[in-house]
Amino acid sequence: MTKPLLGCIADDFTGATDLANNLVRAGMRTIQTIGVPATLSPLDADAIVVALKSRTIPAAEAVAQSLAAYAWLRDQGVTQVYFKYCSTFDSTPKGNIGPVTDALLDAIHGEGKGFTIVCPAFPENHRTLFNGHLFVGEQLLSDSGMRHHPLTPMTDANLVRVMQAQTKRQVGLVPHRIVAQGPAAIREAFEALEASGVGIAVVDAVSNADLISMGQALADTSLVTAGSGVAIGLPQNWQAKGLLQKQHRADLLPPAMGHKAVISGSCSMATNAQVAHWQQSKLPSFLIDPIALAKNDQIEKDAAEWAKANLAKGPVLIYATAPPDQVQAIQQQLGIAAAGELVEQALSRIAATLVEAGVRQLVVAGGETSGAVVQALGVQRMTIGPQIDPGVPWTAVKSPLSNGEPLHMALKSGNFGTVDFFQKAFDCLGVAHA
Image 1 (cartoon, one colour):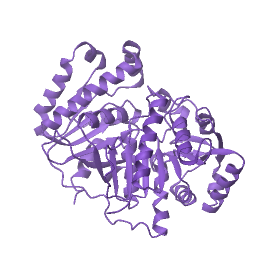
Image 2 (cartoon, one colour; image 1 turned 30 degrees about the vertical axis):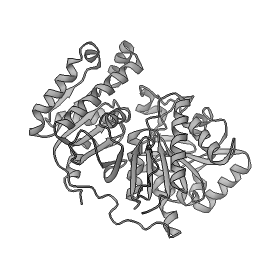
Image 3 (spheres, one colour; image 1 turned 90 degrees about the horizontal axis):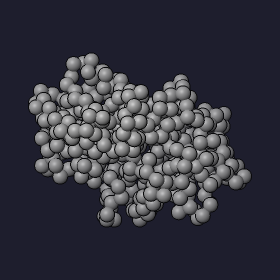
Image 4 (cartoon, one colour; image 1 turned 30 degrees about the horizontal axis):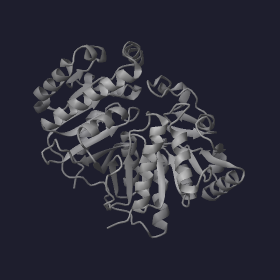
């Protein structure tokens, strides 16, 4: 039985699998739990990721859930804690990244004490930080499609300023000119900032080499807060101490079987393009119109029946994905929260019906949608498998609805994946098993 070394808290389900994917790629056997487990039974893994659905809930609730996850991980004996948020730093002026970071630092080090970093950079997915500013590809975060996000519109790319509005601690910056000098220079910068009263440092990163250097500098840091990218630089620290043997195949999953389906609730630019590509490929799809759904719940049943009639022919797509102007019109008519809840719950019930009908390979697009689907399927634990695209792995889960058969799931953050992601996912799973 392996004692876990790294304990992670993720603020949504797709982000959790994103993080777990990078740990598996670095050779750590990783298990993801859905919420805080009810028992302290030990898990045989090098890393444990507790997936929460806390990104957009009230800050006080996010703090409470995160502290509960921390307490459970602490009792598992982990030596380092990782708070994972989105690579586009999805948040509001009130949180939830800042309040959760403060609460975790207080729990680990004492009220107002401790030091940690902020770094959502993930260069493989075109998220980079330079002079404290977050870029999505070649655009500043504030110029990207994230400025139209229905729940957490990001209109400021300066993460020092964004984070300072959310935290009671002083926020500083480790610029790229220091990061480029390597781990020793980064550690010295941490020490100087902490000595000057800074409790949280935004750290630049524009390449994987920067993340590797940063990881070495974080070897003795009790709490790391970041996107999933920083995770690639942490396993080397335990390997250097002889505490971790890199696994040759940490991503093995059981063989895939059954029908294939895609459930898409994300309205990101990337997912809109993926849905369009699916349709241009003449593959079957069914649109869930939130306005019509609000007036007639028969649409949900129609979608499920349509899918069941088509599953034997190949993969099907059921989607509520729409461009920003349509999303805004829907929100104006139904309300932001009500529209989101309506769609998430409908898609989650459809997913449950499809699994009961024999779907055993399921792709879900969108963080909030993924959370709703996972909960509807009664999933409690996920074994992380091979990567489909940066940030998105296949997983193997158990669901009460799958008649004891293995269920493979891929939870895709809305912004991730190539334009042919949905088709690629099923091709990937066809050759990725033990």
